[in-house]
Figure 1 (tube, rainbow, N blue to C red):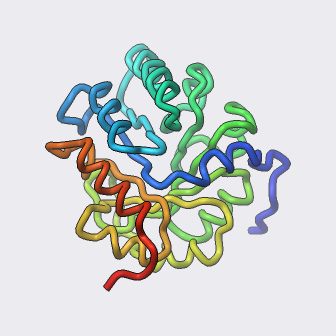
Figure 2: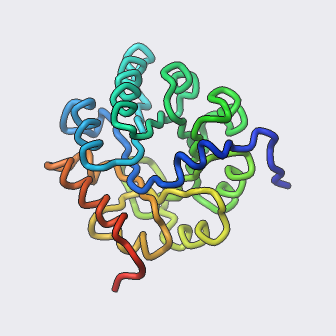
Length: 227
């Protein structure tokens, strides 16, 4: 299969907006110990650069008002707000971006719905998917799961080697994802990641703010291989 760039190339505005993201936090009401909006505010206080709202099971009537509040709160904090899966609702609430998986809406269709000035992220699990997403106009890709995770149903983690491959072969920003925690983050950084997506390790923490700050500090002070 030949991969050719689509006409709807990702706008430079959205790439610029995302290129400085280091701490990317995924929030799901099914995992949080606190009310979802309280969790959001604490994650922001902890220094998150981008926040994804991931709610696969909520009805539209429940999801839309939550997404609207996420947009309001993140806008005030100047934090990027990315909605998972739902391009229609992302457009409705004027989210900063959309994140889609391999089984969700196709990249060109998602781009057509949300527009060229919005961030579009795509989950990838191998280099073919990564290159395809890049050529179709994704702003960034997520690469993972790096380690085994119970947050999503994957057969096998892709491991650190995939991160190294993405670092060499992909030109758009990438986000390392999949059971990254304070014990293994240095391995992820050593593999070339500069942005990590965290879910449970932060939103299930007893102290969300301090845990997020610890991750953010590690990301912003990393200067090379740690042994």
